[in-house]
Image 1 (cartoon, rainbow, N blue to C red):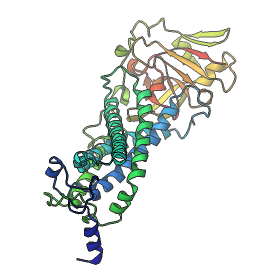
Image 2 (image 1 turned 30 degrees about the vertical axis):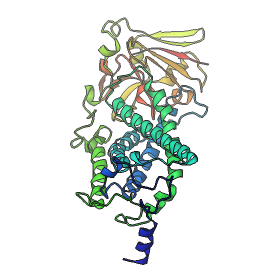
Image 3 (image 1 turned 180 degrees about the horizontal axis):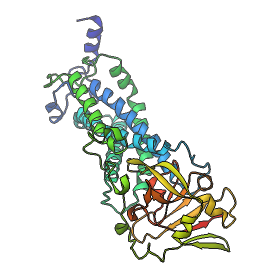
Image 4 (image 1 turned 90 degrees about the horizontal axis):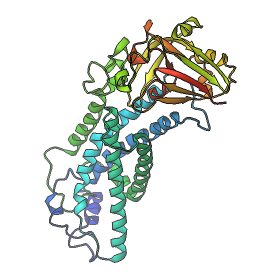
Length: 408
């Protein structure tokens, strides 16, 4: 044994060396049951590092998604690159998916610390209670974010609150608790990451039994599980992976080769509402025009290939044909830079209207689409007309458009 190892061994807290009133003495009976060396700071720090990276990526891309859905942001969300939101949201969901096995292994590795004997000194007891309370907040927020995020991906909402607002608020709680936890545990994290993975200097005193596999094998299995989780779901946004992503909730299939989230039936849109009596109203103050679908089709048409990218992480490209929104706004002499409220024939569910910011309304690629991939829109894609704009969340690409009101 080297002098370095001897120093580490002598520094390890034991029942005999622990001072009265500290948490370094013998563990509780429950804690003493966890003797595997796999449950160690070496494993927890390495898994925690990648878990923190995944949470950081998910947090930043989540902020992008939240900002993209604001109706009137102080700094306009950019209209390009056209694939920007598609990539951002795909990365957001991939990071959250990878975090699931990482969180499970992280919690498994530190689980015995829940049963550590609390200190007897009042001040130390208060600090320990605060530390454990902050960890409780972190764990609860992390589990909520991952569980609610996965439920959102599958469009399952067994709750009454707004997913978007709540997920956004708890994200700040989670990232704040994570930063606090890293700050408190930084000396242990640095020590664990700076030592070989098999080093036992930071192990719990009763962690003396070898596990069924080595620490390296456990970590490799964890990395493999995280990568596998992403691979099996990423086909929702990466077409090349669709044959292997057997758990992807969207596979690229759907009417006219593009998936859908909400059908016309689910939205309460009837065949009668989109029939011969359909009219589009474009309004600016006292000025207004009303157009039939045939009259829309007689206007200047433009064809663009643009992705439809949804907050659930799936996306698909389509070739859309329709009237530039700016052309319709010119009919009522709307000024450039004006936002537009877009209303739908939808009678059930959320997202029956959206606000199209001025930079999107003026963009030449923002269309009131009438066709997709060379055919008239399928009713489930928004027939008679829908909005399609570059670099915009799918939830805001309003379908079954019946009214456009200039907001300036």
